[in-house]
Image 1 (cartoon, rainbow, N blue to C red):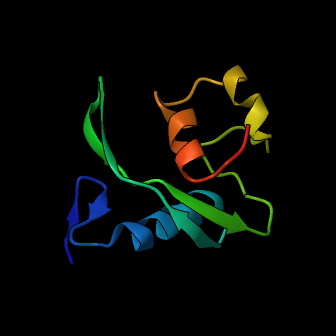
Image 2 (cartoon, rainbow, N blue to C red; image 1 turned 30 degrees about the vertical axis):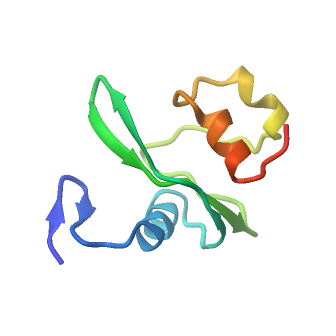
Length: 97
């Protein structure tokens, strides 16, 4: 497999999400549910997003890309700057608000 723009070409989305979770936070997880993928256009380009509900059991470790962490309840989501449509996507994964 070749690296292409920050991802491994032909890598399955499930495998990629768990790899990214591990690389970014040192967490391992188990995918509990998969949502419907969708396109997201931002100022950085057009992306395909694959939503997964993942169970993790440990605390994340921060790296040089992150300065703080916080676990939040779904009801607190409105207080944060997130991608458009995140709340809708979480509802599709049966996350209750």
